[in-house]
Amino acid sequence: MKIQMDCEPAVDRKSAAVEIHGHPCYDGVIREEAILIIPVPKELESLALSRDGDDWDSMCNKLESFGFLNPIGNMHVTHLMVNGKKEIFH
Image (cartoon, rainbow, N blue to C red):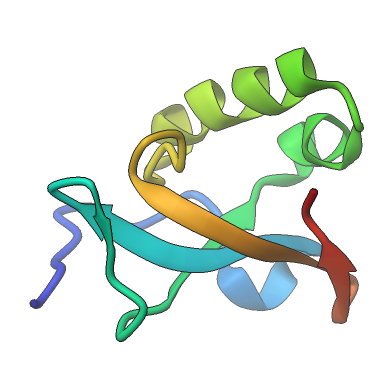
């Protein structure tokens, strides 16, 4: 499967302090052979790192306005990378 972006993302992955890592879900099946990495824009980092589920949902819903996939229902999140260090997601 090839994914093509029609626009440039608003965030450069090299500059992101927080990244969401996981596997895509397609037709309800987690595709472990593929890896997705979504850089979190600085404006959304506090929501991503909050332990509040409502903050996480809000951050995910705002990702699309930055040109990124909303992970809710579209990927199985395995972990976060925070300043280059792996963090447990749940």
